[in-house]
Amino acid sequence: MMFLDGFVFVIIYFRGLSRERESGKKRRKTKSGSLFIIKKGETHFNVAAESLVLVVVGYRVRGLLERRRLIKTEKMSSEAHFSNERVFRGFLVWFCSWGLLSLTCAAGRLSVSTQNLEVHKHLKRLNKPAVKSIQSPDGDIIDCVHISKQPAFDHPFLKDHKIQMNPSTIPDLMFGENKVSEKPKEKFNPVTQLWHQTGACSSGTIPVRRTKKEDVLRASSAKRYGKKKHRTVPLPRSADPDLANQSGHQHAIAYVEGGKFYGAKATINVWEPKVQSSNEFSLSQLWILGGAFGQDLNSIEAGWQVSPDLYGDNNTRLFTYWTSDAYQATGCYNLLCSGFIQINSQIAMGASISPVSGFHNPQYDISITIWKDLKEGHWWMQFGDGYVLGYWPSFLFSYLADSASIVEWGGEVVNMEEDGHHTTTQMGSGQFPDAGFSKASYFRNIQVVDSSNNLKEPKGLNTFTEKSNCYDVEVGKNDDWGHYFYYGGPGRNPNCQ
Image (cartoon, rainbow, N blue to C red; front, side, top):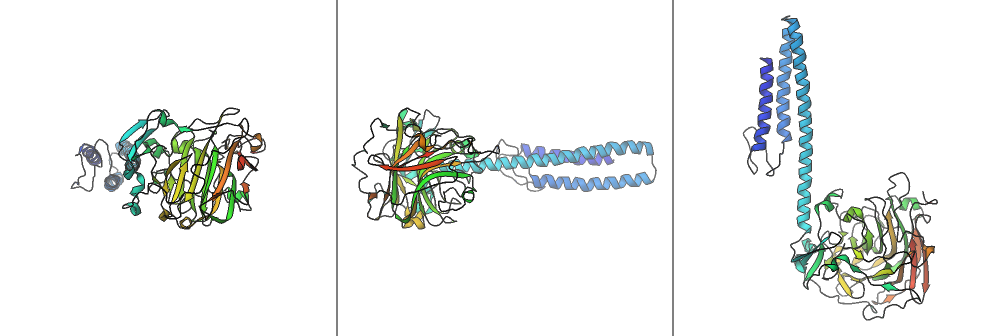
């Protein structure tokens, strides 16, 4: 009778699970409690219901054991009793172990299901309906999305926003200026994006790199996808380099501070640095900064980067970034959240740049200009010699609503020290600055925008690096390049461990 009672509960338990697996295509409620089927084709165990069954069985087992003790005290069939007792206890151990394992597996499946649901919702928000889709040679899919349907307009403050198709004010010497003269034997070549080889987006649409499920899954969570970690802006005034490097980020930069800046420009040499591990990156960019280096730092950034974690490969890609709270909750890369409004149909944020520079081979560079429209207050970005890409609306920022207080140019890498040593992730070309042209990476024609909306050479240009024996920077000036600097390094080397 005791074994019969136990097996009755086991049968009831299995029957309940079986019914839940085989039940209808949508949520329902049973008389015995809350048992839900979340999605057709998947088995979802209700942990609460299973726990209840196990508790009931536990109480029943307790009663059975009490009855066994009474039987034992009455000395009924001692040898048979001992044998049955061992069998029964063995069954209880097996049953309880199975129950705990079932609960663990059920919780795991529920967690995976929740994650998949979050990823699906995130992909739906990011990947807007395409007028046309283009397969890029590097595996990317570029969706041509109607300009009014882009992710920026998910922002509640942009629901009724009228797109500004051209900036109201443009810094002097930006358009129609002659290309900077070149040194003898130095030749610079234009770059393009790989997806241009297989198609183009029409006027009235913008190219958007399609986000894939695996892209989001590589992030720590769907919520953090497309966001930088905290403390990724170099703090030049830090007296303690170790304090500045607490986040694992290292820099080699040139910068100006102490005034009001309304934009900046630079021409950046393009390379494809090697990145040691997938959760590290190497980038070269300019920063437009406002506020203190605290919880309310405002930053607008643009340049090129190699980031396996973000893109799933080691290609060099054009990128932008913005934040108004020091990378905590606001902002993102490219178009991976609402904010930046793109108007250009030819350049895709996050798309691969091609070709890239090589040692003693042709050198390629890109020009990036970011400036504040003094009439409307928005921050605009131009790529190359005439591609006005779009703008960050003024309401996104607090300190940058007026002007920037610091401008920085240079390289940044993540140093995770996964094997207990400094990373081998390269910055720039992977060579130190003294290697020179066609070997070391450079920034040339560095300029800032002043309050009169003019591009000017920066005054009081300073440099900063946390560990110069890992990555370094050297500035210079001449008639051809104006203010320039070489920067970068190999990371780990005999002097950088």
